Amino acid sequence: MMHNHASAGKLPAAEGQGMGEPLIQEAKPLTMAIGRRVYSVHNHVGCLDPWPFYESEVPVSPADPGPETREELDHFMKCRGIEKTLIIPNYGIPVQEQPFSHNELVVKLAGQEGGRVAGALWVSGLPRNRGLTDSALQMLDQPGIIAMKMSYLLGGTSDPDKWDEPTLRQHEAIFQAAIDRDIPIHFHTSPGESSDITGFFKIIKRWGKELKIHLVHMGGGVSGHIRLLSQWKDLIEGHYRVYLDTSWAIGFAVRKLLQELDRTGIGLDRVMFGCDEPWSDFESEFWKIQGARVSDEIKERIFWGNAEQQYFSKLA
Image (cartoon, rainbow, N blue to C red):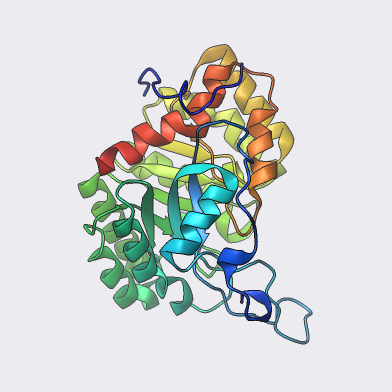
């Protein structure tokens, strides 16, 4: 049964803007969420400079710029029917300072919206970024800031067995700041190399009973999905504080996870919707959930209920 905003109010508790055109004019408000109440726990804000990626001979911008003003963010949300969102610095070029440069934008936007917008600040486990990370940690108590974001795509590894002593100390400072505030760290996951899910399993086993760990992209690819799905039940029943969003996940993984949630309820309160714009797109991410053959309660929890409980209720 399809729910509209009025009927979806309560849920039982459970554990380079092209050619100089302004972004706000690029689309008219639509009803992409088709009456669903939707929160996204994964949206990027801020511009990303062009870069000569891979074999490119000239700098290119593979994704549209993220919103940079309150008006642009509001328009973005209205166009997709997103009621509340968690914003994260845009990143993707191999410049260490770049994502840190959007932390103040995240603080500004999260502090303006009175509970509609929350923020995750960029931090780094690399010792060379200690000063930038220390500055980010000092902003964690700003209004609307309820998470941190880490990615090893810009260097380092998710495998703690490979961290030297300075790297370990840097991570421990970040983890302790999150534990002290009871906020999660969003970790980018992708198969193989620096962001492989197997490294995150080690982080979970070592710190995950105190630290909230949000695994973005469900492992990030076929091998990561299979590994994560095979351990999901054990992680939840082992009382590890693990959370997921379904952005960028391949279809079979989302189907399998939702079927297991529908069948067993294990981890029902740990899975959330994220559209990962501007790198992914709202429509495809939405229909992974909307089109699934599972109960409407499962969809309601993923689209908004779990995010309200785990994130936005803390803004009240």
